[in-house]
Image 1 (cartoon, rainbow, N blue to C red):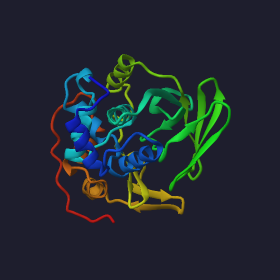
Image 2 (image 1 turned 30 degrees about the vertical axis):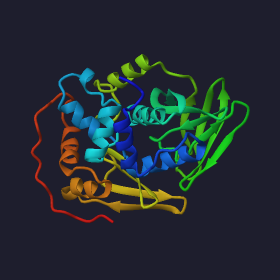
Image 3 (image 1 turned 135 degrees about the vertical axis):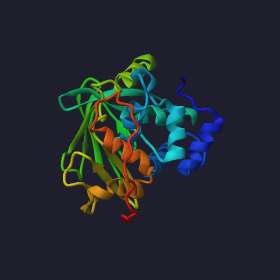
Image 4 (image 1 turned 180 degrees about the vertical axis):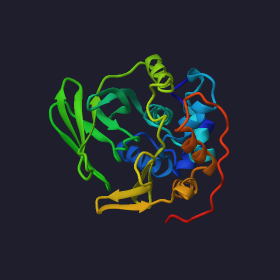
Length: 289
């Protein structure tokens, strides 16, 4: 596996994102981040479906080629380990230089992936999975802030190569702890593979997050009653969802296949590794926005 996409896949991916090929620079990087978060969801549907239709965890990871083909075909995205690798592969194909990191969230260790890029002699945090909606400069000597449509993101140095990542308009200001140390490709692959075992993250809950019409929309299956939430700097709203029409409502809003969402919603209640194909009734169509 390579961090570099083929020219064909790179061009198909950029076409899907609606962005041209440009030279590596900060403005273009922020444009790519924005395009990604508006087009590619942070979601667990794809990994739940992959795990329950694949015999062994080692065969489950959706490496960059599969990830981008799934995005273009199904509107899928992924969770942080696969998504960060796929976006980093695209950035590397465009000439950006950097590395992947594995980071902490509170007391949970090594649970979140992010990218660090080197650009014009400076370092930048790039995280399309929280998501952080713009590249934030990393400075070991002082706090730095990046203002976006959704949050002002601040990196606060708290130790050697360690930064607290904060966001301004979120109920929980703390986002995660950046550990600015490169992770070897082989080690990163092993982390991705392990994330599909029984102890993996987001295999027992359907989660979706995506920017739609300049608002961040999100859904968590463990939040009851079922609802979608949207927010930007102007505030937060909720939309209640009918359990009987849950899959079709989510498919309409997040532009993902209804049958895949239905399968994931069923499988989160079954043991990992159970491979029978679910046969859920298809609910009636409903327009969500």
